[in-house]
Image (cartoon, rainbow, N blue to C red; front, top):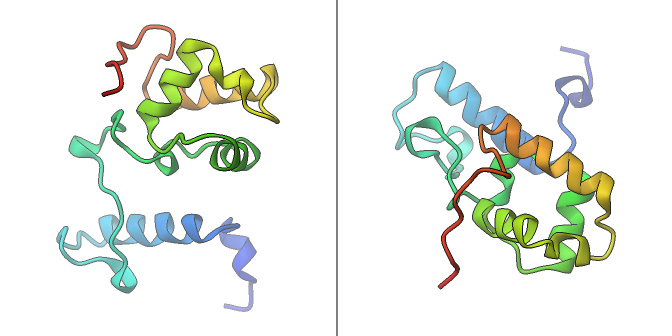
Length: 122
């Protein structure tokens, strides 16, 4: 009980929300009961989809900040479009190293960025 919050691996409010959501799943709370009254995004069938917000990818903090500041990228699909079109490298602060890490993040989420059909933006 005397351990600081950092022992839980929490760095952001998003980390805390994910921890509370996971605690709710482990406790088998119904979908309409959210820990601490928080309403967060739920994955259809537990799978990250193109409509999911970027937070679902658990991107490296630095890359997530660059995307928020340098683009209108809000969803997993938006990021995949930027990556596939080559426009990702046009964002200030995103280089080949960050691009490689983003690709690895997609793979961890079960999305192969090199072999994923991206619908055209409306």
